[in-house]
Every structure is written in structure tokens, then in C-alpha cells.
Length: 162
Ligand code: RP5
View (tube, rainbow, N blue to C red):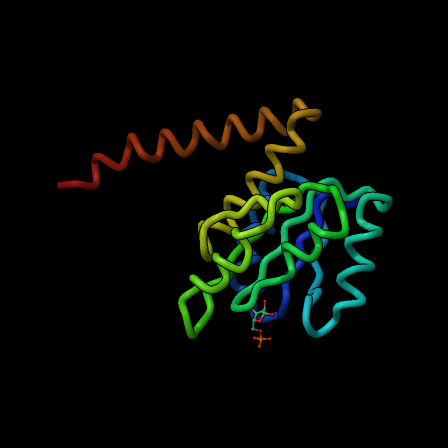
């Protein structure tokens, strides 16, 4: 199937984090593609990716980066597709630099920013799927079932408190 979600990241070193977004998309049977696209090291590729994504059938882009994390914002500058930004936990500043680089967009060019690291990448996958579920009832049902499973796990976890 043609990919509907584009998962991009600034470096292959971001994959350890970004694979959690892809795991969710696999689980929910959402067709996606993944690619390393760097705002600083491959800026022309970044613009080409952003400019062509919609015409290729991509509906949501998940962009992860760390440190001076300009990828999500610069992709957002070149497309009106929804962009979900994932701050990767950097070594030097633990991802606070990534978070602030991604979240503090100027008015007019939105990036939906999630939490730093694994939880953020997981939620990025879920949020992208939830956006697609607006027009996909089967995907909505899979999302509902996942929520029910999480609820059951939490309720059962009381038994672990002994
Ligand atoms: C950013 O610089 C990437 O998103 C990555 O998080 C960070 C470090 O990249 P590497 O030096 O590990 O390739 O562009």
C-alpha cells in the first residue's frame, strides 16, 4: 500500500527513538515510510521531501530531531500537511534543547510537538493514526480497541501492588 505517514528523522542516531512511532504504525496497520532527512546536512532533500509529500499521498509527517532540532519546523515551513515534531533526547542537554527548538514555532506555521523521547515518539505515531482515523472507521476501531487494552492493563496492575 502507498504510505500515508512520512516518518523522517535528522540522523540514523534518532532511530532508537523514532522506531517507537513506527512500531505504533505497524501495530495499527497504517502504511508509512521512513527516511533520514537532515535539516543541516541535506537541506535540499528536506525541502524536496516537504514540497512533494502531499502529491505523493502522504497525509501526516512525523519529524524527529535532536539538539538544534530544526527539521520539523523547516518541513512545516514548506508544506501545509500536519507536522508532528518529536524532540529526541540529546546527550548534552537531555532533549530540552530539542524540545524548545521544535515547540517554539512562530504563529502561522504550526508543529504539533510531543514529549521528549520514547513517550513522544509513541504518541506521535498514535496522533498521526488518530488524524487518519477521522476518515477511516476501521482504523478508529483499532484505536478504540487499543485504548480498551491499556485500560484493562492499568486495572489489572493493582494486583502487582502486593
Ligand atoms: C540532529 O543532530 C539529529 O536529529 C540528531 O538528533 C543530532 C545528532 O546527530 P548525529 O551527530 O548523531 O548524526 O540533526
